[in-house]
Image (cartoon, rainbow over all chains, first blue to last red; front, top):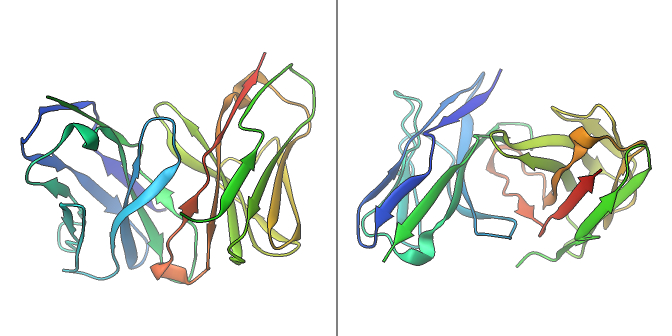
Length: 112
Length: 114
């Protein structure tokens, strides 16, 4: 079956630190990969996505590169802000279907 | 922001009572989904719909039923609520473009079953 594994949190950083949240996947097919973000008390929002190998998704200073050889889609940001504090979810869709498989989420806490 | 509303936003009910949650969209998207979010589990798909009267089960469908009589509305029903169904429920919509699809999420409904 399909599955997504994320690093466990919380990840605690100081403002302006470098962020990496690891995500690896198992898929019976060729997936598209997504990062969603959930701010406190809100629903999920799409942060970025990549639909084929070596694609780089980027948004709001966050980046992730689709690595087929390592089945990974790690999220990075060069300098985090307090406002980035949220829960981040990695997810995949297999071609031909429209149902997402989510990881368990990683909480990020950024302190001033 | 995608036009998705969920009602109610909060509900407290007792074990054994029926509960219906409503998702309403103004985007005319083909696909609609119901997820539950629980600590340590992330989001898990309950049911989804790929058109009016067309629905299918997700990963955790036991104890839940759904209906979609109009494009804009997707109802989730707990026929007899149990404490294990205490959770935050999210509705999502998408155009149904397969592997390039983006899902848009509603604000959630917090359900407590006593």
